[in-house]
Image 1: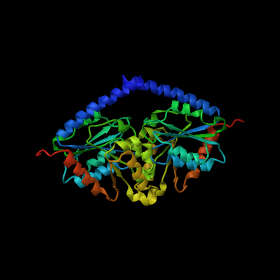
Image 2: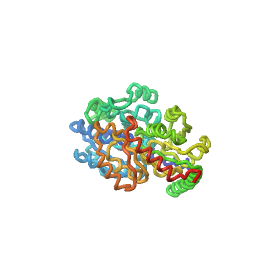
Image 3: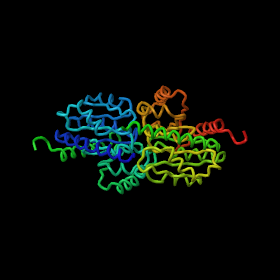
Amino acid sequence: MKIPIVENILSANERLADENRRMLAERGILVVNVMSSPGAGKTSLILRTIEALRDRMRIGVIEGDVASRVDADTIEQLRVPVVQINTGGTCHLDANMIRGSLDQLPLDNLDLLLIENVGNLICPTDFALGEALKVMIPSVPEGDDKPYKYPAMFAAVDAIVVNKVDLLPYVEFNLAVFRRLVQGLNPDVQVFEVSCKTGEGIDQWTAWLSEMRATQVPSEGE
Amino acid sequence: MKIPIVENILSANERLADENRRMLAERGILVVNVMSSPGAGKTSLILRTIEALRDRMRIGVIEGDVASRVDADTIEQLRVPVVQINTGGTCHLDANMIRGSLDQLPLDNLDLLLIENVGNLICPTDFALGEALKVMIPSVPEGDDKPYKYPAMFAAVDAIVVNKVDLLPYVEFNLAVFRRLVQGLNPDVQVFEVSCKTGEGIDQWTAWLSEMRATQVPSEGE
């Protein structure tokens, strides 16, 4: 009787995610669930985002990994509040893990909470965390065929940040083909092309994020 | 009562994997479980391996993906027997899926069976398929810190094929650091450095594979 148990876990997770979402939105925090393959650039995009927005927003980070705290250590160097979650083998974060880490963040002093999920294009799709926005980062060296293989992820997200465009001259990645595949799976998704290495395209991404916070999370005075 | 159920699934999988392993070894087939992140180069390495060894070995392929059959179509162009398994959301192949696909392969006419697992560095670690060798492909643009984050995968494999070394000039990847991390997790692992794009390093990899078949799978005359 495997399927009923899985369904129970999923719906319990949905309930918890809804509670997280409500609680965080009430405090005016925009929560972003950042997902990608291993090494596509989740930490790098978070670092670039902090650099670009830290003068305008108070930012916190939750780092998810199977093991290690190397990413949290990197983020901490920018002196923003960061919590590391080690899943110990589980291939995704879930709403309960997020709940357990919120106590360690200064929620009354945050505008934006960036959650770096475990590096994986499959498992995180099924587990809402309480986020307002889902973002995925495909990277150019992975190839332009990934939407064929991980359609649920590409269909589920609000934004796709194509990273490592500085490597376009050296790899086979056809942006037009990629955009067409994405369009078929998710017509309303925002697509950004960036290089976290050179900084190219980061402005458009962070401008969108600022806009999302302005529209989705009314400020306290409103 | 989640843990006992997971344990039952794992041990049932182990039993099936052992049966697959015995049955395939008896037929003199070397079975290789190829694992990596999405887009690291599993299909490209399989194509290069077929090209290099097809005059000396009869090769079959099982392609695992959450969705699509684009990789199987690519492999089929080389006119080798190939079976596509779509897991429909599951983040790894398992021994039962392999069992179900073996009927569709000419097992009496194979020396080498390459199994491309689902693109994922976490889930496939727990599920034996019946393979003689586990191989993983980290790719240079993913960064040299992956052993920290996916230690179980790096510790479990017989060989690590570092792909996309042609991109070394353009990304931050320190081979010495990487090898030191790998050494700490898995002192006996074979490490190869290749570019499936240029063909660099493929000879060493396929020479090792030939040697493994010669030593692990005695030919029928012996």
